[in-house]
Length: 522
Image 1 (cartoon, rainbow, N blue to C red):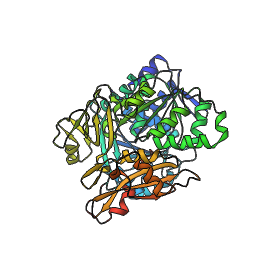
Image 2: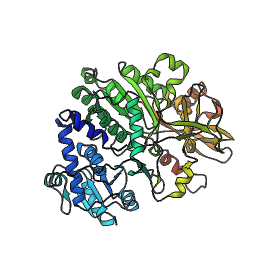
Image 3: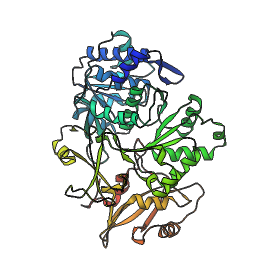
Image 4: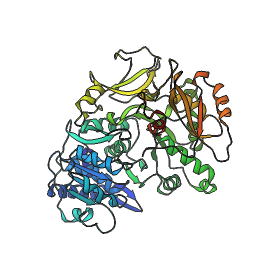
């Protein structure tokens, strides 16, 4: 398998079909393929050789999708850069991977001078913007216009496709090495689940550097649908894009869903937007509360819901919860709140600390085996050996499997709170708190306690004009979960620290409480 295989198929069979629509402009598969082959030729002319790393720092765009196809076409290796990182983190990832070429758009072009001044490995900067290329940078469109198309190297199989850096909020990020087979197998599992179909008009909202969207891009090339591109997430613009561009599928993080529904409910003009084209809403990247799941079901009753659970190291898919399980029967059975069944060609187990498989219903670590498991961490054999043992990727997530094979994720093991010898899963406490009518968002963490080791601390964003007190929240929780799980302290905030894909950065919330202590978790 190779990442450009889908593109070749549609260049041969339906070259005049629309590949991408963005900003009122459309491009056919034939036009897209020509641009990809010319960009690959330009990279080779710049000295990019087999296996060299090429990075991109950009918002979502047609050019980002071209980058994902042209770099492997040129026999090189991808290194998409996290758009939320500091310059120091960006430079670390570039130097660590020895990336030689960096492509930047208008948004990040101002950072180029700082990156150039400190990065040791980058020798070429390419400006993929709409204005005039800044001094010292090559122009993306000029490179495509002035270089001839080259043949696809068809880099494939276990060859390195990309280095995808993950983490970075505490210590240096790790470079996840994924092969062509890794990403293609995950994307094929998406297509096999009846997502990203040939007739799909897929709205890209998740940041394209993230594996969730890259897998969707690859799946859509396999099936031959149309890519609709938004530069970044904006709740109003997402709803307008669905209505105006007749999007049929979209993938959102739960925090994005929350913001989208809040805008929709608070703005009368939303009622005039035609959502009839929307057939599938995918969600993932972080847990979703039952309250939010019910809200999205009620807001879009005609759209099927689909959850994907996984991680970068799994390219990224481990399990899928399909639309047929988002119904009243499976709400009562509890399956609607699970992460679903293992994806095609993937095995999942729940194991104890000695890697022994646990009985159904017992909580342990979720481990995964299959063609999607990463090659390893770049230049980090110790971390690779700790994560992949006997062929199984150890996710660091705690969960259990029910009698029908559905995986239920309880918490990140590092987010589990141990208070007085009792294990408390923050996700369970968050679910209880989120069901309070005054709560908009919540994050639960463990903070130090001399007596109990840790206690439960909740950080809450209240809905506008809601006046729930700390006592109200605790009383609400006591009706739903055991007393020892209820928060011992609560703080109300206007916002929570979020990653680029909407995950709450619990490490940031914990840091002030654990500063100078040995127990601190990352």
